Image (cartoon, rainbow, N blue to C red; front, side):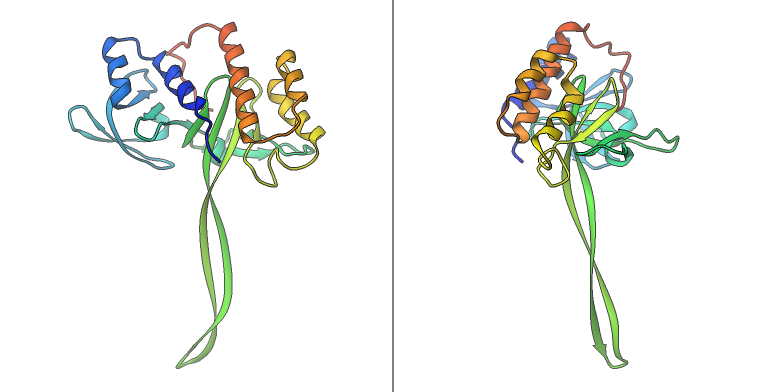
Length: 244
């Protein structure tokens, strides 16, 4: 799935609101940066982002490693990507009786966040998360001792896109596959997506008139919903940085 170009503008615009100094505005264009959970901002170079580890080289050439619970947002300039800690990758549990499937985040005491790529930021968050898919195949190996069974294990890594509404904790999948919002009837898709945006009735009415659905359509409505919430709310309180 290809990100629509407007996402890049939204990413940069949103994070520039967090950077109030002249230096911040200058460095935002040429350096990677991190907003930490204590609201400090670091500038430098991101060298690697994994599920539970982000490697960073600061302006003093010091090599640092951060875990998801330490970083609120990370902006990788060369890749035009934003990362945030999230429970979506490992914390989803299905809500019974929903079709297409709706999820919520389980809040186990030992549940730890992972770094997820942010597609849309705001009241509704949209993430890419990585998933490992395991498969196996059987066969026979013949050697000097005779024939014996052999099982091969294949591991494939894929990405799925999920949208999470902060106010309700509801999560839906928006990736293009048979289990997400592209499956099932139009009526079911409208009802499911409506759980995220139907408290903005004008916007939802416009969505109901859409003749076809695809990833970019869902992203467009999530972004517009967030813009409406931003107009109603107050500027972000940097002392309240939460993980979703």
